[in-house]
Amino acid sequence: MSTHFDAIIVGAGQAGPPLAGRMTEAGKAVALVERKFFGGTCVNTGCTPTKAMVASAYAIHTARRGAEYGMTTAPVSVDFERVMARKEKIRLDSRSSVENWLKSMRNCTVFEGHAQFEGPREMRVGSERISGERIFLNVGGRAAVPDLPGINDIPYLTNSSLMDLEHLPKHLVIIGGSYVGLEFAQMFRRFGSDVTVIEKGPRLISREDPEVSDAIRAILEKEGIHIRLNAECIRFAKEADGISAGVDCTSGAPEVVGSDVLLATGRRPNTDDLRLDKAGVKTDERGYIEVDDVLRTNVPHIFAMGDCNGRGVFTHTAYNDFEIVAANLLDNDPRKVSDRIQTYALYIDPPLGRAGMTESEARKSGRKLLIGTRPMTRVARAVEKGETEGFMKMIVDADTEEILGAAILGTGGDEAIHSVLDVMYAKKPYTTIKRAMHIHPTVTELIPTVLGDLSPAT
Picture 1 (cartoon, one colour):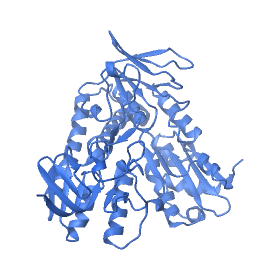
Picture 2 (cartoon, helix red, strand yellow; picture 1 turned 45 degrees about the vertical axis):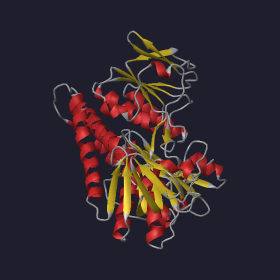
Picture 3 (cartoon, helix red, strand yellow; picture 1 turned 135 degrees about the vertical axis):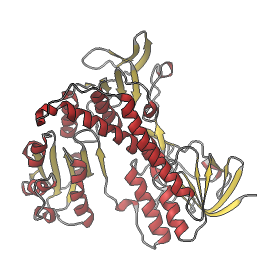
Picture 4 (cartoon, helix red, strand yellow; picture 1 turned 30 degrees about the vertical axis):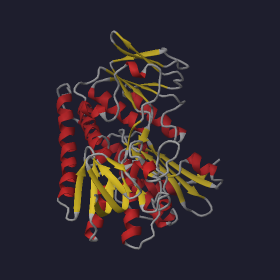
């Protein structure tokens, strides 16, 4: 016999708990299943702990620059154990908050264990069998481990295992020059580790425009991070004094020897052990659950939200998935995934805030473009803070005056980008911001100036 619910939600990440809240408020009986840590990737191995560590690294870096601000300080030393203890408290507090909320939620029954399908409407969690009118999968993803020569002969870190690191690496070798890898690269360099980033491609974060990639590389190299590009033959071997990573780059030593290796080469969905075949749910060749514009799978009563559906890999896209599902099922509000504008941030220092298209994407669309840029050295707020690295960039459709995309690499860029994003969602012309009066001195106040200096793309 199975216990029947109006809804089964598998996974307590960023979409599952708020959906449980909305559905129980609507009088639905909900079963929520979590097999490990409440809060999902964001709370446990992603945003919450990593940004706590980024904050520590920023404070340490600023303290080292104390003389520039008029401070006389003793040499700054890093207590890595305290850095990690601070991170851990923030992480555990966030995890407990989610768990306590769910377990105190009226009409919500929490199951702790591994959920697997027994049929289209039935699941097994340990010895329990449960069934639901609707089933919502919010099972997230995990670090992908590439099949590189020697990978099984060495100890390696992922973004998850690094959260439990007890020692400060002497020399951290990071495989992968994209968002996750670069955040860890800068923070551990600031903690005192030697850091080498090995990237197979010709530049860092290849989805960004070249000038963004080049600027970020310059920022990291200025802090003493070694960047190895065009690493076409990455391989590993144990050495007496650490781990060697073979790179065979076009220049530089053919091998890098480090004390620790971090794999930051992408993610994979946690869908391989759900027994989706028992429910008839389709996945793509990478294991991501296929969904339509309202997050419904090919089985009409089963939905997939968050990282497991391949429609976004961020906390904010997962939460937006919840909003779309709730709007359609509970509010008679026809929201769609295709309505949202791509936006995200890279949390190095200074951060990169991105919205909409890159220039290369905009050019491929065939539109006539207007582009404006401004270095952060010409942003008063950045000068006053002594944080002038980076630049602003705006991309506009010359015919419709629609803002197509923006990049703000600089102090406050992750916050300032929302001024642009909100106008994009309002479907207003760029002149809406251009004519706005913003507060001085801020980073955002220069966005109208950039938009006033647009020129045709050549």
